[in-house]
Image 1 (cartoon, rainbow, N blue to C red):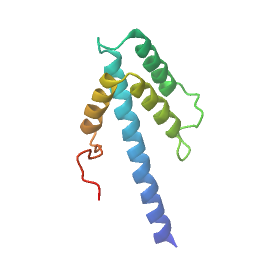
Image 2 (tube, one colour):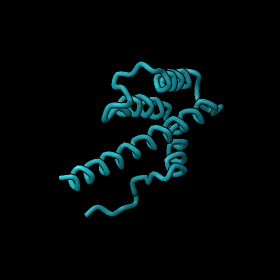
Image 3 (cartoon, rainbow, N blue to C red):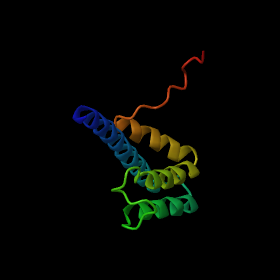
Image 4 (tube, one colour):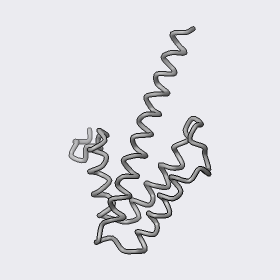
Length: 110
């Protein structure tokens, strides 16, 4: 029984670390996009609102719960994707920097 529980916790910890890395990569991309002179002030205000949501202690899902980063992740990802090409470019660079793989767009579909 203990081996099964240990295996389950190792899986949970693996996905929790991945979610935490995703949030950090997206937050860093948001910050870089916020400082990008090519991004309009309207898009910057959306990103700023998402960053404020990320650092406030009041969340829709508290971070200590399983899946607690899901709301942070969705808010930040929506803000980045709302900026268009600049946000996507910064997000890709930050994901690579944090060791997160991008989906292979050139992969042949079988």
